[in-house]
Length: 503
Image (cartoon, rainbow, N blue to C red; front, side, top):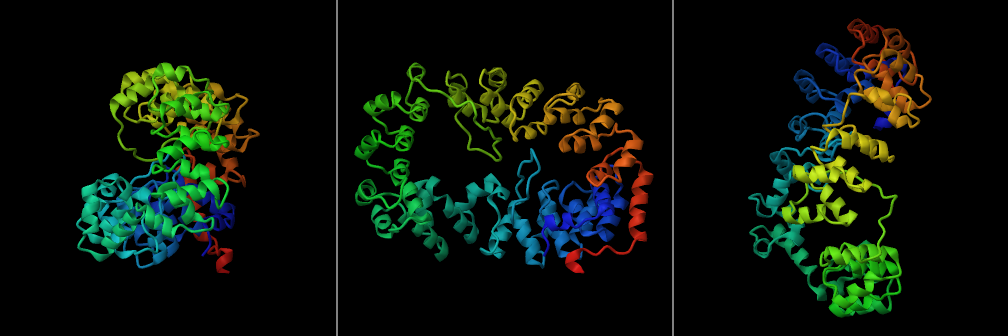
């Protein structure tokens, strides 16, 4: 079956125009239904996958006879997940597999979970062929899985073993369902140092690394890594392991490898002597790691010669976080350490006074992370962050709720093409400016302006014949309704389009 890339690459100019019409917010319902029923594959693909849809079009997509078309709707991140969920029992595995897989989010998109009953249905009927992606499972269901009345769901809940209270672990080990008990037993085994020692592979592989990083380590295993590691980096791996003996923590705090010392510097069980030594470590990454240690006072942090890298990349947090203690958040937000303030900036429930404080922070990372992650990030902060943070993640900022859409035409002549493209978000950008920017040397700017509703009609008509921009121009909401209907009518007058994989 062709990939989405194959489908788009095979689309000719008339097909790409129709694909733009399929995405045009001004296209009426009857046009969308016609494109869904009779359009070429590329048109059906973008229509079902890349936009919200009227209810009648949703119904038609769910009942569409083509497996591939239904699968595109199953991957649509724009529609209500409850609409996608109606494909849970689709007769074709191809559709069910794409429903189970999380949709590819557009810039600034946020995963929305499937209904809990749909996920439970998948767990019970899809087996392990294509389990539902965790991004599609609500936090409420994830937390309730270990005690869920459905045994198969409880079996999934065993995967949360490391964070489960002792009483829930005990109930899973005594579960009436044999599969749940067996899964719980396997997880419990991983906390037995003797079992880990017995099962630890003697060659480098994923299982060995997982055990060294995360499982309970016997003294024999630890000593083996210290004296005769199987692979480079194993000393650093056990430095992260929470079961590391206290005397080995002391030993590795003075390890000649700075990566080992950096990892040890994060440990909460460091002694005072080790902390003092790491605070003046010759390696700057070690000093930086130690400088955010939770046991330090603000005065002790300030006494460490640390430096926060200036070339860090910052990313929006894509999903829900476990709630943090408000006092801990406030302490971080008012800390003199930029990394702790950055940690506070990630909290989407930050109160207004701290939002105001961090929006004016001197550290670029604090400002950008706040802009990326707080739902009430102010407009001035969002625009400032976009202008100052010249990395790909900046594009997400334009999708935040408060990103300004006025005054952006002032950037139409900016030297940075991504900044010039902001003029496309301003409804007051002058028509002559919009037209000029459709000829901009940068393709991102050209595409953004081809969709601006202030684009003069004569230029919009020209772009419908442009190989590069036809599909974007056809999605312009200012496209005349007569032109939309004429493009769709032309589809019926031409021979049925046959893609190369069907010829």
